[in-house]
Length: 204
Image (tube, rainbow, N blue to C red; front, side, top):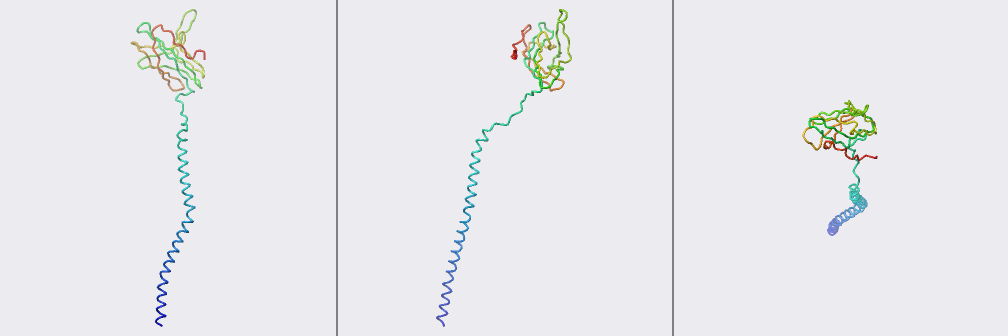
């Protein structure tokens, strides 16, 4: 009986480590199985991450080279434009100077109603021949038809500039229109009796 009991105890002791080894082996096998099942998913996620980085790097030069969105022109084609402004100084001190310029009508008709310059009085005038006599008249306004060219030139419409003293080389002018915003330009001041500068638009 004693021998049988000893054999039973020894068998139980021998069985315990085997159970632990079996559990450890089972756990290791389970871990390997989980990793094996997860491997394709992890590989897919890694590939997607790498692909995203590569696409971002490839897109960066394209975005850098892409043209900037078009900027709206500072110049409004629907409004009149002014060019070639110049002033002929008076031959006699105290007399008014004469101003000339060219207006280009915009997409809509408008009317020039005045011209201003700091410290000066400026009037719109016309000049015409009647009965062999040159006549000058003050104008309240000058129409600027759409798309038309309206010239202020010697012998025709011009600006009478009162109060200009000294010998300035340039004169700022602000043109006021009935329907649109004012236009500003700078007129070159030329000597008395100066001939008109060459018209860059002649023949166009």
